[in-house]
Length: 438
Image (tube, rainbow, N blue to C red; front, side, top):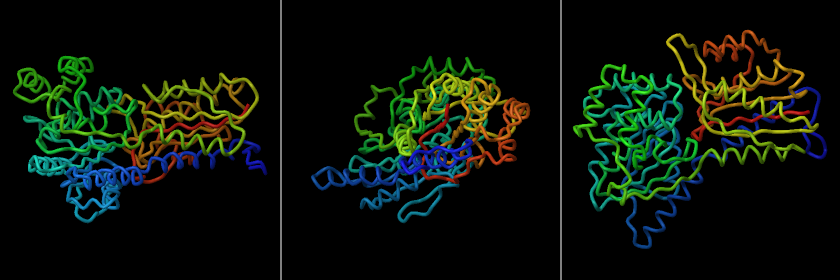
């Protein structure tokens, strides 16, 4: 870095630390503690003015422990339940803490779902439930619908993760097979008052998609949701047809629509989202020097196609200068039975790098790309994502083979290109950060 604060240098290796710092700045901006503490403090102030104080807390998601601890810091001493994943587990006084599996649910999630349901069902009109919801809740709280087993839910979740569906459509289907998602947890807690605070890990911050909307109305019609199941061949699973028939006949409760009176008792506020993370990463990148941030599409759709789109944005810039791209969201990967180990962030990063390395004449002279999950975990592995630069000796043939087999993790691990953060205590979607020089 020069005396003026500008990041320059010879070769793209010096971009690596800058991108790592920008990624961590994004994660830090999405930390759940300060926003949750402030939100709960407001609730307690209202209680001091005559509104009912919280009498119970349910925290669900990868940031559940951090949010519950923040509620304690704000002075809320109500008892409650926490449901989170292994990486973010911690004991918090006054809470029954449950650890569950992500992204595929397990028996611990079933026990956690039962505990959450029992607490909600015990509430009365005199109670005020504080719901603290963050990303990952869909898998962490499986709660199978009547007639559906945990094994069924696990099989469905594995099929959804391999389907290539985006998070919104995936959660439309998940809600059909749950007894708590799709507003049903709010129904169980009726007639208690509910204050719901959310950290959004989904594009568009759609309430029904954050942890599959345990206290949010269902915007998709039952016919459209069932049509989605058929369109993607999920009715091949043996238990699905009978369950769809039960939903149609009303034998099993469908997700609750916006006209259901249960939502009259629910107040909702989104405390943080991917946008906050992107802005923080951008500020750090811009602070590093004379870098022009250019527009690029949000992370969406197939991971490999997304990587090619990001590379095209880089190659479209012809004017000499120093540039950056910062986008967020969530892509998808369509898996098969023979797929290896990796994740969507790794695939976006590797595809971008291949597209730039394969066309050196069209690509900038120096570039670096980092794509990672703000929760510190990309798919079923322990890496947050990947970071590659134009200085790396990229074997394009082997990289393409790793992508084709959805086996990016061992390839990137061998070359030291994985980004490892450990559990971050938050979950606000993915970030893609690119720095390049023409």
